[in-house]
Amino acid sequence: MKIRKILAVILTLAMALTAAACGTTEKAAQEKQDFKLGYLASTGHILYFIAQEKGYFAEEGLNTEMVLFNNSGEGITAVANGKLDAGAFGSSAPLVFMSKGSPITIFGGQMSQGHALVAKADKAADFAGEDYLRGRKVATIRLSSGDIVFRAAARQQGLAIGQDVEFNEMESASAAMEAVKNGAADAAVVWTPFRKMAEKQGLQVVKYSPEVAGFENHPCCRQIANSKALEKNPDKYEAFMRALIKAYRFYKENHAESIEILSKYVNIDKDVLEAETYGKFVESNPDPASKAVEGFYQSMRDAGYIEKEVNVQEHINTSIYEKALDSLLKAEPEDKILQQLKSEFAENN
Image (tube, rainbow, N blue to C red):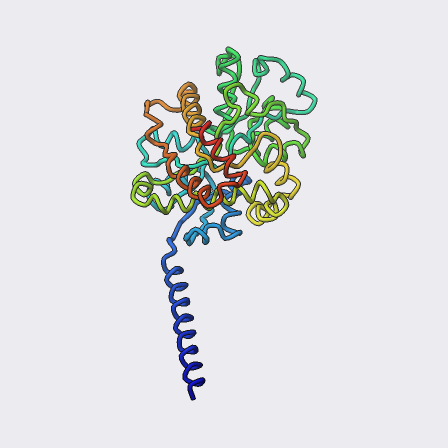
């Protein structure tokens, strides 16, 4: 009889513990914060895709809904209006929005570099000199990162835009490449994955954007959020950045699986995805790189894209990323990739 009573007590305790565990699990699920994330079908958004597919967002308590946009303008507007929690839609376009009073803040990085100038292979030698843009017609996409970089290159070469060199604005990278192929332009400004796609179409990269002095690690996509939302709920954004840092570590250590994940979101041949994710002069990195953003802003001012002077530092928040990184380092102080990110943060911000 005593044994039966003891077994009954044990069973009761086990049931209670199970119920408590289930209750805790249900509570944790209920406590997940909704996070609406805007993205483009681009190789530059690989950290988003990895964080979603590998469960890093969920691991950090975020119930993330990924929303696809066709262009940067629509995505930035959605962030500014509070319809998205965050997104990465270039760097130049957000800076223009900021200069016009949009309530958005840069708080992290996404892709850096990744742009290039392409031309016909038999004309590549014409771009070997120091003033390689003199007398050229360049097909460009207004406010793309490469557009900013190569306009700055023209100024460095002492060229007057519109006189010594022409920048003809096109509607897309594909249209810019077509202009080169049909002879309407001497070169085109493109970005990943169009760099590799241009080569497959018989064109040749004649200059990578980081080869332009002062743009060695220039920003492309930056993480942006509504400024008030960021101030109101910094913990949520720290969780988001922790997920991206984990995704960055995975991206650095697991090339093949990262490309498999990327191929679910970007419908391009895997050899192109590989080249434009792990190839020359391109990297995805969650560091906000505020110094590079400030330099990029000045180049946009010099190009006449920003008319009203603003204090760009007031629109950059580096503490969210730093706290996220420090919290991961506290748990894994010997992790080499986290140590590398900490060292880079000190240099870049």
